[in-house]
Every structure is written in C-alpha cells, then in structure tokens.
Image (cartoon, rainbow, N blue to C red):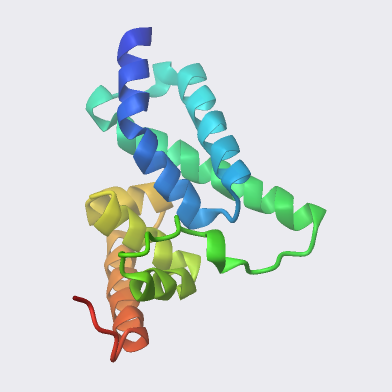
Amino acid sequence: MMDKAEFTAAVLEAEPALYRVAKAMLRSEQDCADAAQQAILRAWEQLDTLRRPKYFKTWLTRILINECRAILRLRQRLAPYKQEQAECIPAPAADDHSDLYEALLSLDEKYRLPVVLFYLEGFKTREIASLLGVPEGTVKSRLRTARELLRKDLEGACFA
C-alpha cells in the first residue's frame, strides 16, 4: 500500500492529465477543479482498494470520470442542460491548431473522451475500455469514428 508521500507524488504526477480529462467532460474551470479535488479525496479515502500501485493513474482517472459524471448529473437536475462546447478543452494558444481543437470540441463526449484518453493521455485501448466500462472493440470503433469525423471536419484545413 502507498504511504502519504507516495500518494502525494503520484497525484502531483497525474494532476495535468486529470485536468485535461475533466476539461474534456465538463464545461467550466470550477467544475474541473471540483471534480479533480473530489477524485483525489475519494482516492485517498479508498486507497486500500487499490490493488496494484502501478495502475494508480488509471484508477484515479476512473474515479475522476465518475466524479465528472456525478457533476453532470447534478447540473442536469438543477438546470436545463445547454451544450457549451467552447470550454470543453483548454483553449489553444494563438500558434496552436485551433481548427483541430474546434473539431475535437464538436465531437460528442462518447467520441471525444476516448480521443483525449488515447492521444493526449497515452492510455491503451484496453485501459480506456476499463475506464469507460465498455468493451475494447467499442473503444476502437469510437476512435475510428472520431478520426473519420475529425478528418471530415478538417478537410481543407492547413496545418503548418
């Protein structure tokens, strides 16, 4: 089992990835911060359930996804849901590929989240399947569909 110092080091290492995953699911900075903080708290409280410390990041990401979904459910109960895609992923810098970010933002969450986890966070399809609770074939299919949708959306865009 991890001690407090190991837990803290692992959380600090995973923190940027947690933010990006939360940003892919939630609309606001405050919700992202709340989800990440709650996920870290739950991870600490449930640390004894972590069977293999080498999978800490995957385990913590699963907790984060659950927290993000809880925030989305709460938001839907409190107010009608409006699709605000502008804040789903951190805004690109002026020299970034803004067309690519816009296209990524236009994807439904079921396609966007596997793309973020696979391409930005480096998770394997098997790990993504476990995180999302779907078969690995579904993850591969969603990645393929996302690539096709992105390709179609980006036709004619120039990346220098």
